[in-house]
Image (cartoon, rainbow over all chains, first blue to last red; front, side):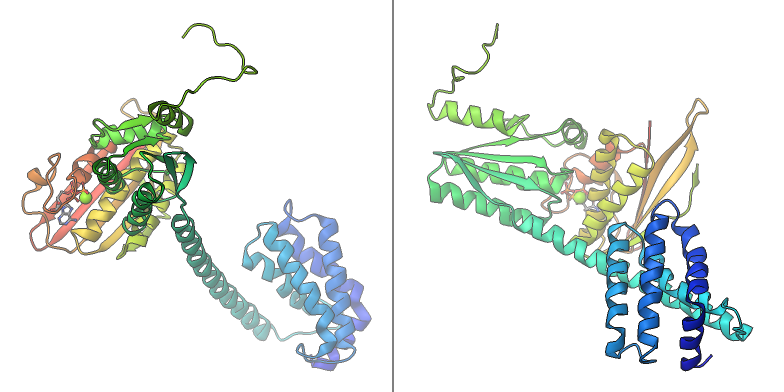
Length: 279
Length: 141
Ligand SMILES: Nc1ncnc2c1ncn2[C@@H]1O[C@H](COP(=O)(O)OP(=O)(O)OP(=O)(O)O)[C@@H](O)[C@H]1O
Ligand SMILES: [Mg+2]
């Protein structure tokens, strides 16, 4: 099949080609992409291909702008639907299969087999590449998350740091130093470290927490830990970490109430709040 | 007990690798149906062992895989197994190293002993000059 001749096959048998393309791509995507959507994709794909082929045999030609737009949209929507890169690319490779099945086309069997085999190699490489990229991106976003942990002033004399994500040595150090610095900068006497967003507390994290609390104490400030989930509490106990005299609270709100009370503030319920019976 | 295949091996050469091991163990443990408490325990144990591999063992590898077995009562159960291997200096006195609070450095000395308490099966082999290997298993209930 020469370039002119595939254009001719397309011009003559577009409907057949679309139908065999659909038969090829639909089964593996069943239940994830609707049939209407696939039909529309096929129509757009072959329509744009035919329009381009009428003008040029080179994909880089401006005649294929429309086809590029169709492919872009197809890739984006497949990605949003959670399909793998291979599953997405297969929709394009199926165009070839459709041509090979078109009436009057007699492909060389050996060449077709080789071509399909090489397609699979390409897909495999592509898949591994994307996976590696995603891992890099995942690590970067995780690091960003950890680096952006802010120290917030909750009240006069009370600062808090909500820890989120996995904590590693260098980053925990940064957060802790920031907390100690903000105690100085704001002249606060109360600090709350909230670990609600921390999935696991190991000895390293515990050691950083303990050191920070000790340092805060030496600076004359009291430091509480809040947001210890039941599973983290049990893990800390099993590890054998001794939080000893450190004040721990279930929630940030509890810790704040305690800090406010010890600054001498009255914490009372407003008139609108429901009355509590008993203690 | 049998490995169900599809295990992953990760190199441990930097802090970020410890995070990766943790995430891998978390994913496998979740897939094995471990509850939140057991999940947090095994992730924490893996964190300790991966860091020991990095810090004391000079780096190595972690293998994480799903395992299937049966309870004493013959009920099928699934779990996660993690194997940490390094070719570092080894542990001269394993008994001491497994004691609470014993550290050759400035750590709390709770990593090894704590990890042992956090898992269902714990096996440590170490030889001076020939490295250290720790295998842990945590089962779903
Ligand atoms: N893979 C290893 N290779 C060589 N020595 C090790 C290894 N793992 C542990 N050790 C030795 O065993 C000791 C105890 O380990 P453990 O994890 O309990 O404490 P740690 O790492 O010193 O402190 P942390 O409580 O922060 O974990 C270590 O100090 C170290 O000397
Ligand atoms: Mg340790």
